[in-house]
Image 1 (tube, rainbow, N blue to C red):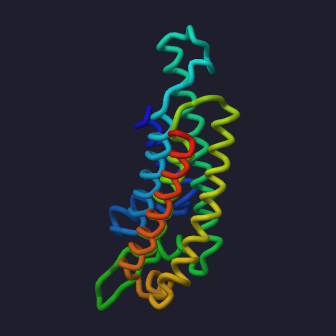
Image 2 (image 1 turned 45 degrees about the horizontal axis):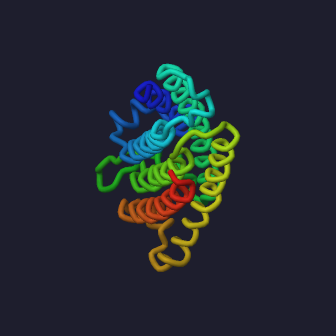
Image 3 (image 1 turned 90 degrees about the vertical axis):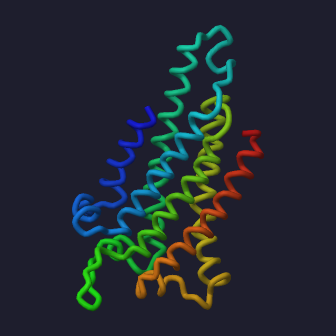
Length: 225
């Protein structure tokens, strides 16, 4: 099931996140590191959602104490599938939000080929690393939203919605804080989009992943997950 759903997440990525890209061309012909980094980030995020959704047990009171192993398994797989789909929706929303808050058109920068001193480069790798890291960070938050036992649809969906909403708000705010306060002298957007500096993309990625990890661990611990 995990393999099938991860393949499905790749289809979602092609249609709704890297929309307009020709992945075969970007990855194989252009050797576009940025496109590969975005794909990696979305797969990591999807895997984290699945890990959280499949990791807990189903409360016997939900399906009845007399339920057999097969019934418990089916209920667990069904809930995992639902939260996986919800996680993909949140990732799509986060990708659109990332684009809306950026002044540099991330997808266009990732796709645009360029040449330096006669050497051809397929796209902006730094921009792809930054965006892929953002997806991975959101995936960590979504792991915190899905981790733990399944107690009821109402409770688990409410927890997921609240934590996902917090991630959609706090991760962009943290990114702004990093760019304008912690790394204000570095001018990360200029380093990423104009100088195509992969180190700047990694800085944005690591700071977001660190912040997302704190959020996810705190939420999971708060729910006893």
